[in-house]
Amino acid sequence: MGKSKKRSLHLGINDRVTNLSREDAILTAIEYLKHRSKRNEACNLITLFGLSAEELLEAGASYETVMSLQGIVQY
Image 1 (cartoon, one colour):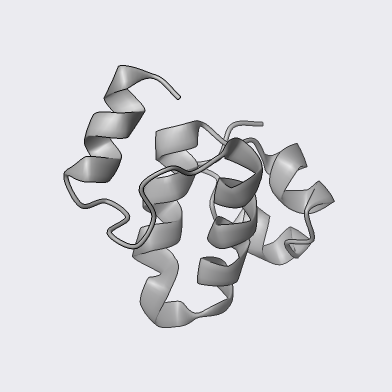
Image 2 (cartoon, rainbow, N blue to C red):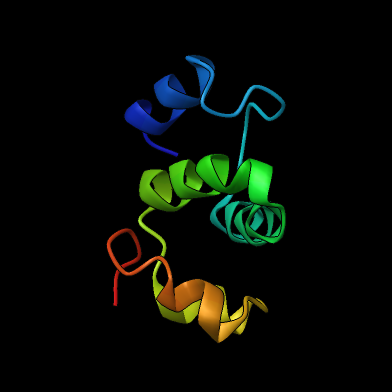
């Protein structure tokens, strides 16, 4: 994990986790997308790690959910 990501995590983007791997970020983002109240946190993780639509779909996100993130997710 690079310096910028470590700094961002320490600033409070994700208070509960200090070290987050890319795989964990994908799974956490998918869980957050399932809850309407945590959608903003999911978007923060997606942009922080630069997650792609393919990664989210392979990890189990629904197609409709990924398509609703067109401005955020890389295709």
